[in-house]
Amino acid sequence: MHTYSITRFLFLILIVAQFSCNGYQKQVDSERPNIVFIMTDDHSYQTLSAYDDRFIETPNLDRIAEDGVQFVNSFVANSICAPSRATLLTGKHSHINGQINNQRAFDGSQQTFPKLLQKAGYQTALIGKWHLRSTPTGYDYYDRLIGQGDYYNSDFITNGDTARAHGYVTDVITDKSIQWLENRNPDKPFALQVHHKASHRVWMPDTSTLGAFQDTNIPVPETFFDDFKGKQYLKTGFGEQPQRVPMRIAAAESRMSIAADDMDLVYDLKMLDEEGEIQTKYRSMYANGSYVRLDEQQKAAWDAHYDPIIRAFKQKRDQMSDRELAIWKYTRYMQDYLATIHTLDNNVGRLLDYLKAEGLYENTLVVYTSDQGFYMGEYGWFDKRFMYEQSMRTPLLMKFPKGIKTREKVDELVQNIDWAPTLLDLAGVEVPADMQGKSLLPLVKGEQSSWRDALYYHYYEFPNEHMVKKHYGIRTERYKLIHFYDDIDTWELYDLQEDPMELNNLYGQPEYAQLTHNLKEQLQDLRIKYQDKTGVPIEFDDQQ
Image 1 (cartoon, rainbow, N blue to C red):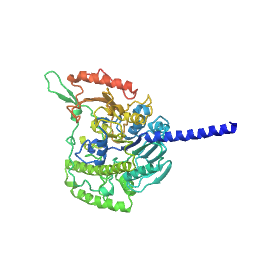
Image 2 (cartoon, rainbow, N blue to C red):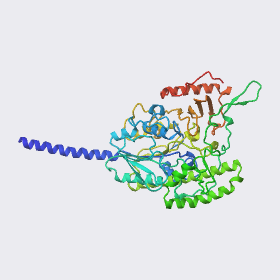
Image 3 (cartoon, rainbow, N blue to C red):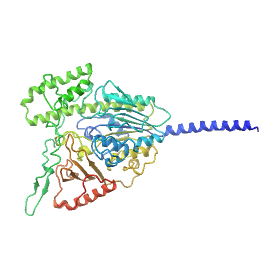
Image 4 (spheres, one colour):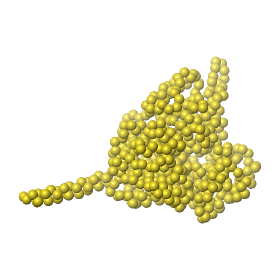
């Protein structure tokens, strides 16, 4: 055979081989699971009906639970926005990834799960809230809000370019997410993060849902008027009656009260009267911020709803007792909050319907969660931050790709350090050894014979607007031990089985001395395991 013929023959073999490889790779890629990770902001588990149906029905979110797995004991490691998002990205606690509070900028040069997925051939995208004071890295495409963003006509930065998007932000984020899905490369797997602004303060409903909960009977939590005295140490002596020892109480020194000016009548509850008679600390922030972003049509609908409420409030305000005013504020807060959740639920339904219509649903992991929990009036509060259940807990639902048989509910203790390892594991990407969380995949498949028996928590942002003290602690299946430190030095111990609302501090009682010592040892072990040298050391000679 002539040299020319041999060369041509080999060239043809290479071309055929290349096409075969490309075809095989496309087939392999098409079989790899897609990921849609939906994260909301400050969505409490109390207002997701798969967990709790006292306040609202969320049929579309419940669809994810019905088709997948509901995590009954899902928690965060630091209940505040930016740190929680950094933990999602890195699979590491705040002191390791560096995002201990909302003020710092996230170090985007570090290892994150989107970078690892991208390296493994995934198309990666983030749409919505970023809130990390840095440029997103590890994404082929991002379309993010600036800071907290706005509920109406918000500005977005799309791969570096800024533009205003007209409309209600939950609708806009969903529209943008569907648009990205339509324009993606269909031959490659994708990982899409849909990060909503809702239901963050100041809870501005869509004009189509204004008044949706106006006539709803919203139950007031039994702890709404709690005075926090149960959080003092209880000391007993021989022949004496148990007495609470006066002490500084971290909960009492916080500024998250609905009844107090912490919840602003104008900024939070929309009581912006034309006469200017309702003057509050944050009136101008609302009047010159959120309110002025409304266009004429939106403003007309907004005023038509709120003006009668403002007039009615002004007429009866002077006749209200402090207790009545507190309950009125709570009800107003909840009406707006629940309306934002209603629109959110509808938009999650839109996204799920799109995935089904396009034949993507079966091969896609759909995750729904929030960056942390939120107070729905428990202890008279709104906001989060504390290690107490309402803010440390967060909803977590996962619908797995077809072919993966899972449990319907998972009761084990899981945490947001586990999210990144889970996404990587499902995608067939090796989970880095330095990630501090664990993949949930073996757990949901029933293949995990043992699991963690305790969670570690550390909150850093003090002083801050809500004046929640720095604290760290341990939560087991039954007990919780918290150490408040910095300008305070107090401990709280709760039996979650007997006292689920955490009203009775057991720390300091002789009968709990051994339990306290054991929990402190466990807490110390967790601090060593997770390499946390921040905060103050644990003292064992406190007694008790």
